[in-house]
Amino acid sequence: MTGKKEKLLHYLRTHKRGITGHEALLKIGLYRLSGEIHQLRNEGYDIKTDMMEKVEEDGTVTRYARYYL
Image 1 (tube, rainbow, N blue to C red):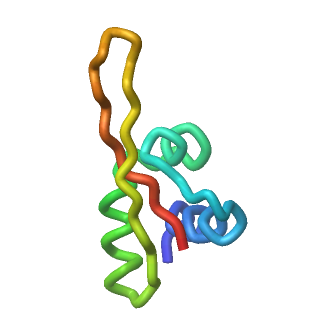
Image 2: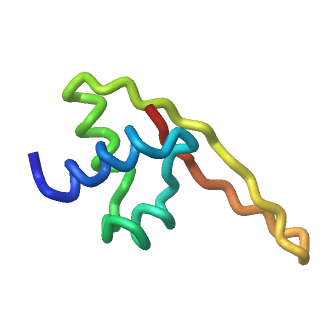
């Protein structure tokens, strides 16, 4: 298991609110969170996904995923 994958698993285990792609980049240095999540799921980890939305002041809607164990 790679170092970043181990850090991701540790983060997911210790942060019940989960992680987003932006948080993964800032806290773990992981650029492609969805790819690591896919690999972990293939290894048998039961990782859930919540699709989130953020509405900006100008009305623009940004959608992103939050992953958690």
